[in-house]
Amino acid sequence: MSLNVILIEDDAVDELYPLSLTSNSWQLRTGRYTIVERWRASLRDAKVGVHSHRSLHQQLYEVDSPTPVLDDRLPLLVVLSTLILSPSSMRQLAERATDARRPCIIVSGSATVGAILPTTPNHVNEIVAAIDAVPSEDVDLVSVDGVTVRRAWDVLDAIADGVAWDASLVGTRIAGSARIHPTAVIDESEGPVIIDEDAVIGPLSVLQGPCSIGAHAVVKPLAHVTHSVIGPYCKVGGEVSVSVLHGFSNKQHYGFLGHSVIGEWVNLGAGTTTSNLKNTYHDVRPNMPWGREASGRLFLGSIIGDFTRTAIGTLLPTGGVYGVCTHVMGSGLSASTQQSFVWSDGVVYDRDKAFETCDTMMKRRGRELTQLHRQVLDDVRERDA
Image (cartoon, rainbow, N blue to C red; front, side):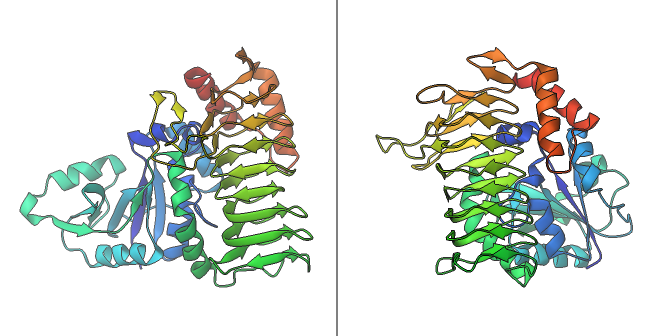
């Protein structure tokens, strides 16, 4: 289908703390694919672009994934970047857009989540004006069945659907270049298991679907991974249950990780264990920067931002929230929240030492801490440290 698609990030992105401190909302991973990757995999002939009012974050994203040049002669489908849709719903919207003769407003439930324009404005800022200029009686209403991610932990609810959708998109669920030990167990009785290119599945490990193991990821011997998404270049061991690791993160050793969302470049020291259930069986109330918040969840582990590390034997409480480039350590149960760039006990993490460590970590995976990374991290230091 020949059309333009733009995923737009709105002001509510800050509520995806701490992942949104360094990443855009369209980079949230709910299966093999992130939100924007699933759009591109589902609509291969469309030009799928992104837009954020946070220009620095978008620039960092576009270093590896440049936004295509949109054709202003084509129809435009614009949706919130936090909207999770099935591939079939995406295709239905794309078909509606290609046939559109007048503007459409897209709703999910009672919320407006997007729009369709017969042609593409010269600039994304002109989209709202173009819709407002049309009399209300000339605007169609299109309803979709989607889920909007409002908090980082919402991605946990999308794992089952996300993995199933992506299994249908990839065709071959186990890549030919993946190395799977003959003693490993792959159980698809509850959902599909995707194993991506060059992933390594160690001896006596158990993968229970729905589950996705990203490209170049390593599942260590004796590991047990169930109902989880392991992003590219991650290394996991011990027990991982109902969790999302976004990429380049390590949980190589024993310890339990449950109902947790982990950013990129995170290292969980040996024996790090999360609690995902309160002793009282009450609703988990994470301590966010704006205060305690009722999650409506019985099970919720840790939400951990990029470049954060835990010491060996770290015990993370139920609903723990940890910022970017912070070091969680100490005897006994850790604090339930820790802002960005903290070394220990409230001591501010020295900027140069922090950046040196981040760069060292990235170089171990053939990457480097660029000037754009440093600018984004400096922004985090100003706003959250």
